[in-house]
Length: 340
Ligand code: XIL
Image 1: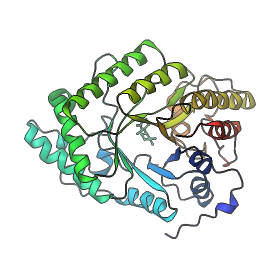
Image 2: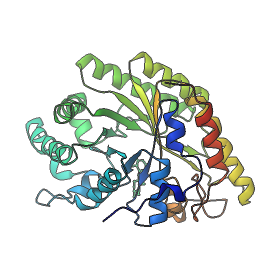
Image 3: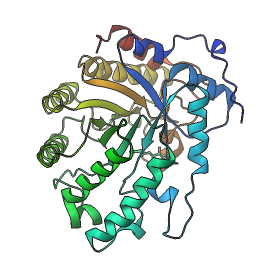
Image 4: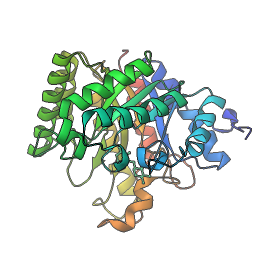
């Protein structure tokens, strides 16, 4: 496909250019949607794309004898390359998209099967600037998630995969990514502590790891705590890790139904959170988990959640790809962000 992305057609200031001015990378999750107007919007505002689901383990290779289903992600990688955008690999491990055929009973089997999967996938995308090697392995009640490989092989498995990832892609940034690290509730603070304990352990093992992804799915139910988040970011920096706000959006599920009021509240939420976290120079990347309501996972799944307000409006642009107050709010935070 020849990419048609006419940046001049999108007049608003580019979020990516504003971010670049303070050394910040701005990106978004991308579903591969073929709408040209939407692709123009992404190419104008983002310098990095993340496959929304096409690079997850079970999607790529559900069974041992399956061929790799690379085509959908290849299309997203092709869009990135055609528009001079970086590409982030999300994710080589996620409990919600497991590959049971690689859950061997012995560590040798796991190194052969899961290690083989990691190498196959990373070597198919040598251009990836960074990789979520692990997604959501930290527990809230327990230090680590109760998942087969984590339960049976623990840090030995995590360390092995990180070393293998470094060997496959020496110049890519390696990331451990997780959610609910920004809420300020007791269980979120416990999760922060569990993440820090994991990182201490990996540091002690000499595991290669560069960045921590704080997903940033901001909830109207469990309000994010900017103060708790920047305290956590500072503790990560003390351990030598920089931070990606890796899946930023605002779920407006319990906000007022009135659209003008709700859009203002969503904008204020983005502005409060981003103003706080962008003050920290160790925050190097902001990825929106969809920049528009036009193509957005919260909008798609809203029928499965209790919503007091009407149709979800989580993103910076509406379902007609028009900028919302949230876009203006993010522009303000990027314009005032200190250099990093
Ligand atoms: C979500 C995608 O947006 C959906 O399209 C897919 O059906 C399920 O996964 N945290 C993550 C992401 O790390 O991988 C999830 O993405 C959203 C929550």
